[in-house]
Amino acid sequence: MSIRRLNYTNRKRIRQTDCQINLEEEEGGLSRFRADIRLDDYELPPNALVFVEAYRQTSWMRFRFGTVGQIRPWDEPRLIDFSSSEGVLFRVRVTSQFAPRGVLLAEADRIRPRRADREDEDREPLLPARPVENLGAQIYKVDFQYEPILLINKDVGDWQGLTQDRTFQALALPVVLREILTRILHIEKYTELDDEVDWKSKWLRLATLLPGVTDPPLEGEGDRIDDWIDDAVASFSRKFKIMERFSHYWTGERET
Amino acid sequence: MRLGRLNEAGIEKLSKYLDSLRTDTPEPYPASILTDAETSQSLDPPVEIVPRSFANRFEAARYLNEVLARSNINAPESDQGLWAWLALFYFDQLCPPGNNGRRRSPGERARWIPVVGDSRRYYRHLLAGPYNVLKAHEDKPERTMALLCGPLYQISGAYEELAARQELITNPAVVAAATRLYYDPTKGRLKRAGTVGAPGTVRRFAEVLMQLDVVWDLYQMSPEELIAMLPPEFDRFRR
Image 1 (cartoon, rainbow over the protein chains, first blue to last red):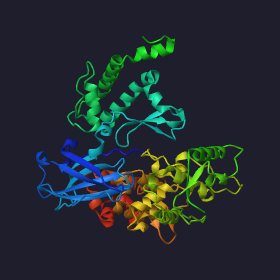
Image 2 (image 1 turned 90 degrees about the vertical axis):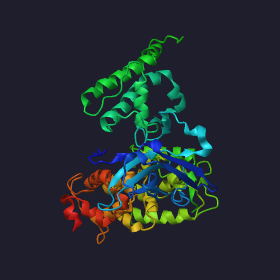
Image 3 (image 1 turned 180 degrees about the horizontal axis):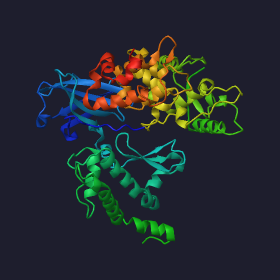
Image 4 (image 1 turned 30 degrees about the vertical axis):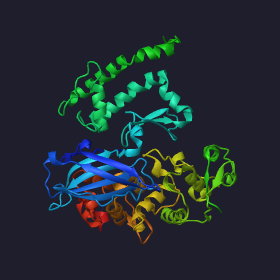
């Protein structure tokens, strides 16, 4: 069961562009990282503590990075508790040092590290697809644990071929887009467009670049969300000629 | 016996066996998959493992931690074939026969063959799940008792609620607080909590903590501080 987390605090959201993590593999599979954190714009107390955390499933490590006024990296931060750095994400947390101690003042989460040796691989598509087992009789599903991933049932066989299939795309992609936008606006209640790294911003920007789609509704305009999503999905379907793709399959006509 | 890992053919045979247990004509236990060169391979260098019984998931996790520490596997947590092999090796304890001689339902496939890339299911493997939790709390494994005190075949509500949430399962204070609140060390099992989701239950514990996590840095807290922050609905477990 998912739990909705309500943020009634003044906790600030740090832009991921202000927290750059560069990962470097060492011999033997271990990794070390360098964190470039810029907090000048957030009006945080200079004595607040800065932490960088690395995590993946049940593995987690925390590194002290000094204070807001003096961000100082941990000596040689190494991911010694991770057998490999695959899939490791980072978060930066700023917390109060004095009473009330431990209040979360600012946070950036789900930071994907950059890898010096894998520049090309880091350019992942907006919706990566992965084959998985245990989807039962479902063909696909969108997973939102971190960023949206299109999970494809391994039992279909050529799963990569399926994702390229025009009929599958025609039937699945508008639904996937609707699900992702619904997730962002209704569940995450996120409307920002300017974060260069955050997946939610990327998807909202993608939608606003579609012909005729305005900026997403702001907070307090909740009743407009469904109409806006409808507009975005309709525009997406027009732009990518979804009906045409499907008709070719349905009527058996060859595509030109 | 030498510890091994199932290959693709072995995993497929294990899947078929699991499927057969859901029918009226279950296949016999396919022990040969563990050693047949077509379905498995031994680790190199070899590692010995013994067929023993475990009092609970904690004991199994601790034993597997010792065994895997002797191997040179770089990332055991993501070794699908290894965990499938181990699940088959300890099958009698993970899927024991009932009074009528028939095995209980094996449940979803993720309990037997870990879904390594799926963040929502990886922890459900009956052996890899407890192993990963124990490994994450290797400095003081006893703090995981609330999660791992049950029989090997059972994924408890306490385990499901905490292991499913990365922010909670990795936090020593959260896991220790759960053990203090819900584990009865004299009986070696969880305290009776009532209906799932009722006030003060583990599900509510996870929900309240996820809400507190928005405001507080829970990683800086001690178990005592965490327990003190909980609302009165947890009083009956606090005593």
